[in-house]
Image (cartoon, rainbow, N blue to C red; front, top):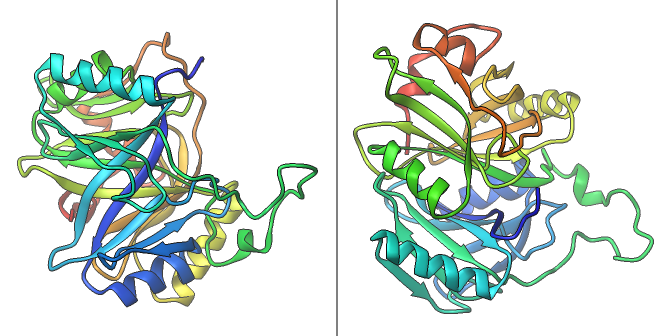
Length: 309
């Protein structure tokens, strides 16, 4: 599909309880590359194969969770149009000045009915992936440092009013619904998976009474073998694993869920199918929700549903 509006997930600012411990986890265990620190004390990181300056920002705080999740858009004209469209829809927007995040241009920020802060931006400094733009090798040593995901891929957020959230993403931002899980009533959704690209999802939401909660930020690996290697590295470093390695029914990805030292869940996954906006969304019924989330176990564990940050 032609990508002319929202391009992709761009960054997540994650709250950690201890900065040094958080940096050790995301940089040394997960294998992200540290790219800078700012006057506020925030630490900036990126996956090895990402070209923009940062995709993960760590901020020390008294409570774990997600400050905001950002999407990169095609250009400044698109940013201005989407800002106007959001206002016309009835959402208040805030302009965050260029440079407030390191190496990042002006951002448009707004709050979803689910209580989450979303940002849009057009510019972020290209720092490359450690290889030249002419005649590059296929990978660099950073590709084998820690778990070494190739990119920050998506997030799953918990909060109320996901019907309104879906309406904003589809009718204002140009996303489309790829899969959904319906509740026992067969009408309302428990969860929705939305895409702005050909990926099976770029963001997902689960209905939850408490607003603004993070379920996980997800990082992409290239193969099932690398997911298994990630499990080994997690065990070597005594990372608290939630579940996996296993497979999803929804999106068909293979996955491990685990927790950073502050209790923020993260995912390392690979696979999933390519999607198109003209496809009919896949529906999972309430009686098969366990199979949809964890295809091998065919049931959910209580921790996966209840533990959020």
